Length: 325
Length: 256
Image (cartoon, rainbow over all chains, first blue to last red; front, side, top):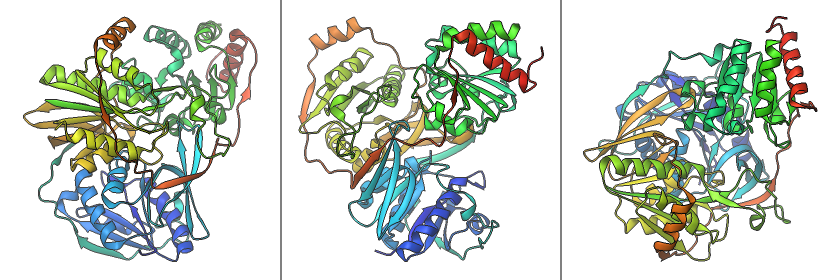
């Protein structure tokens, strides 16, 4: 085993995702403690310029036409071969849409443990300690791998982004080693077809000064009208947490969160929203957050500025009345 | 079309989660278990696929709670055709790695064309079972999928990225798909129908093999300390509404 750390760079549409820089920054700290190097791994086609913007100690750039777009099968084959060849102490990837297609499968094929949903990483003496955020953000679990080597899947936003970005203070451009794919990619069962951009034509919830945002606490589809009345009176829009858009009660364009949209209104009313990490990621930048939830221990109250524990279904009609004066 | 849906039971997250006296795991016995919500979507997508492309749906799970029958009967009431239970000494909170290995061993004998799993579960500390099952079976895997259309030995899937962007992939069958959300909300099964099925149906049982473990050990479990907390407003809904309106007016977002 080497003491190096491999970090999978994540990119889409010619742009690196912030999680790449976040992991690289953290990896440099850990690599120093382990006596190895933080090596970013970028899979792509004609993407060397991207590789040069990653502030790792070195970048391994795997160039192949089959890697022009993210492909879970191709990525898994390449990473499995690289792990076998380079024997890293740690392989880091995002606990993101892309990383979630890879880590668990790689854990099985390489025999390395996977620790997922990681929002804390430390080197305790020579031991890696990874903290996972599980059970919908309600529990933190601090774990150590049974052996020395390990794969971790990191949550977006867990580590500072600047330490891994070339151009930030004291972060220099890395040496880039370009290699051909270490695994044959000629006969893939998964084929990339196209990217689909978000639908438009609905209200743009990212441009609203106020959002009346609703979650499971709304109870049933028939109650959405109550939230719409408040929004109409305020001249703003209704947005929602994931379960409501998954249920088809509101269009996808209204979804706030990691897989939906990031919003920063002046006032965000979070009504009947518990505050799962997926949701918090999309709204914590709002200027003022007011949360109403019958569960006084709901995580939403940890990010909200003001809170109340009354029933949102009682609050909504009262709110409409007060707004109308 | 032979469709298999592996399912997993997890603690009900709306309950207060208690940690055991050693501070290393949840106090599982004190918790109520429910079906992973993403598995509900996997079952729905499987039944929808069966309805459009024909075939059978087999639901399969490791019985870690002694209460798996209920989840299997519910799946049958929603349109699954067959239910399989893997039995053995697998306690609540059994690692994903172990469940995935047991499931993969059982699924191998079922020769599936399609395996739909929930994309993740709230207790997947050591990873999601879908990609693990795919790796054990040597099948491709695409996850975070919100729509599957099967045609001529291939599945067209939509995978979600951040910010509402999606990618379309074409996957040759057999394959494992991690379902984020079904084409339509999971259907409801009336309790009377579930009871009727529970009486009339026999669930096939398979004895599970060895546990493989998570590959990592939890040395401390704790509830996150929040950096801050909202200033709480007491009072009736009317009083709370008044405070909200006052704040909005203060920000100049509402006249009057």
